[in-house]
Length: 146
Image (cartoon, rainbow, N blue to C red):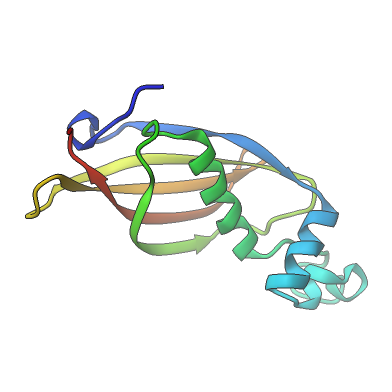
């Protein structure tokens, strides 16, 4: 895999991750540790909630998104170094047995005043079974060519 640096990137490029299916068991296990609310951990209680069924935590959607993108190595061995995340939007619930996939589109390239680096602004969209469930904007630090 070829490494990509600031100079190699173009606005409009889209990177697609692999996929990850999240089972009911994985959703409950994650929620019990990180977001222990009944809508994520108890199917009976979830039936009485806003969604009428057990749903995965939005935090699990976010965590799975970064895992998918890191594993896909969009810039080769150049790491994804986050500077900040903005405009996180949960558009639909994460349902058990959904298959997630992340898409990252370059929307802006910003030169840094410091030598050896630049910033890449991306819009990240996560889909579950082909339907948008999550979007966010990231600003990442990326090195220039050595």
